Image (cartoon, rainbow, N blue to C red; front, side, top):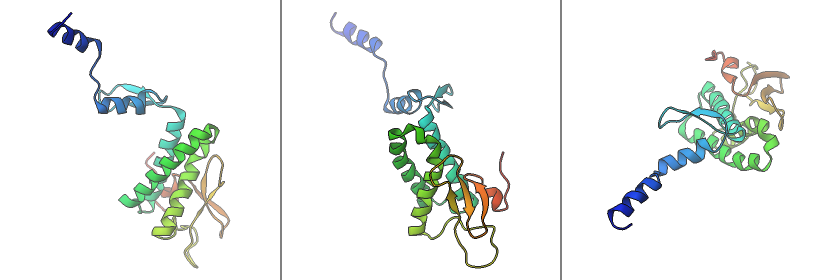
Length: 169
């Protein structure tokens, strides 16, 4: 075979793959949980580690939005934490259920350095404003706690209810 026949055969043998298609394949197809593919609407899956990271991101963003501090620079802090925690959870897959609390703590620490305390306690009406803390520090089912009042305020991702809003579910 030579000339146009070779080019035609080669074109049929290997499908053209764009960079976007390859990234979509890497991100969604190789991993394990079902999500909708943005290109053709088909259902694909991502793995449990990636799902734990997506869940952690969503929960922390919900709490940031509830306290009205979800500005672009703060969302970037969440993304930075998720990138760091991706490596952490790849090294210790059994810790996937702890990622939401860790991302919340990372963002809380980053905000303290740049913006001040977050999230402020909605329970204590008097006295100095103080931040809620995550409990357990490393464990499943993380929640926001006010140590001054000694109460569990809300689960991570549900701060909107404690702030006087309503959940969307």
